[in-house]
Image (cartoon, rainbow over all chains, first blue to last red; front, side, top):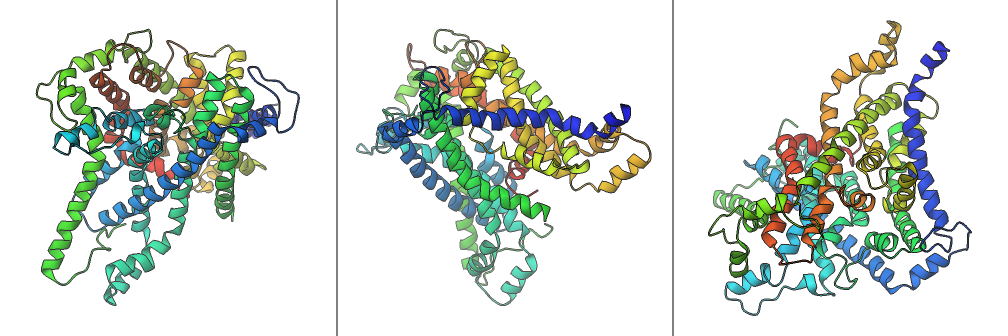
Length: 290
Length: 297
């Protein structure tokens, strides 16, 4: 008995976490998938009834907006945060004396809760008292910046706040990448008289392809999960102009009492994450083992 | 890493070189203003009176510094019908974060130790399954979790929130420790086994003392995650057990009475203070945690 216990200690130690993950991650995903195929409304039902919830979802104009917003927000957020992050990293890589302080400044928003970020930007973008009023006070009477309350533009305020929060992190990733490029190759290129910008575009940036991939994965993951920021900044409004799948799911689950819709929208989110993350994780784990 | 200056701009024209350096610093400075501006606005707004906010502008310094808004935000601001400020919720977040961080870090250390040093058949698959759990959108577990917390009798309680944070933090904490322990040669474990040391003895006397840096990284990561969480907090709490982020959102969106922007900003800074403090004190470890989750270990 004692011997058995000793031999199996590692398994026994890992077992609770393993069981927890199997139940609370995979079991729960299965539960949500199952319920998304039923007619559940206020209470879950367990008789499978085909894709009726998905039909309702795709027929819903609110979901249409939310899903469309995910792409507008996601693409703008990822592309701009990557460009800005790379730019900041390259600028900081020029032997800057105050690099440490600047890095701290660029990265601190990442330590904040998205609720705090949303609260701050909601105040800054408030048309009556914020940036608009301030610029008007400087004498530009016709200056308008009402994106926060403009249904066509409100989604871009979320892009701005999200970029403010996360671009410093992208900078940190790229800076680490720049520092790991082989210095000898760069010195050789400089000795040959190749201009600095060519060294970057032809040698350094291409060699950082894995970092672009990592940054893309992390940012897309942040974009899909963005929930707090929308709640704090616009509350999904005006109307539901800035709904994202995450806020749609939450509204269905906890204020509309429509479990079927909540489950099916969560499954769509899951599938979007799957298509991005699974190939990445698969290749990561394979390369680690091999 | 030794040579930081290897990508220095090369330019032989001295005037052009100086202009380029100036341009560089100006651009870096503009970006610094962009990142600092929201915090500056929050801070100055929180120190102004409401009258000054209505008449003044966003970026001017307060004419008269007043701490009234801070006092209200800490102990008097209303979240719906209750008017107790941020204070009770701040302590709720502490009560959730401290045990949540401690338990998930300890379990992560043990799990990481097993999957890196005591590999058995299937250990890799288990690790992959746990790792994947880090990436799911949590919306997909919200509905069943609400029901299970109810069945366990901990719905809407602080232990319930601790439980949720431990479960969904495990993937990352295991990943951190696994990637750290994988670089420790397995001969060390083997030699200790030959000397008659058991699983826990080796963990306690050899691995834990080596683990201080990764413990710091993990604790900071988990603390930031749990403190800043909103989704679980808003889904699984009830009046009285809400964490600080939920309280902040309620104060800001409370529709009763006059809109007190200075109180909102003070409350936002209060909610941000613990993680900001951690970032300022241990920024290096904070960044390491962030990048550990995304760059190959």
